[in-house]
Image (cartoon, one colour):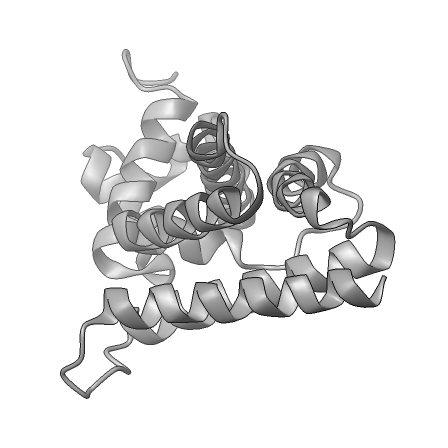
Length: 190
């Protein structure tokens, strides 16, 4: 019988706290049960094992990213939209490093809910790039480039990979400017 007051959202919140504080690999059924002050088998009332728990974390992370990006992009187009998307991405990675890690794993093509959630995030980036005339494969290549630089920056920052004492915000702005120049060059080729 489930503990009163314990439901799937509470389980996911607790798992997110562990992931953000200690990393995604620290999220186990045992660590989660300890945090919730329950026995591990009780978690099976809410998730069907560790893979399902990690799936739920990814779904939660994608949903939160989607909401954050929608808010950041509201009323913006062109360069302003790409900048807003980029800063929102980095803000999410900084605020939720464990949850961010959960959404980076490849989505199972048979998992419709995760596919839809991931597609929503990608769709926002594609829509932000439409003003540059990029569609189809060109838009996907541009989104991949955007995701690559955003993820690379977020990951290097998290790992302490920027050892030279220069302002990281300046570096990030310069990378966005470089990406935008590249997108405009792609636009000119179309």
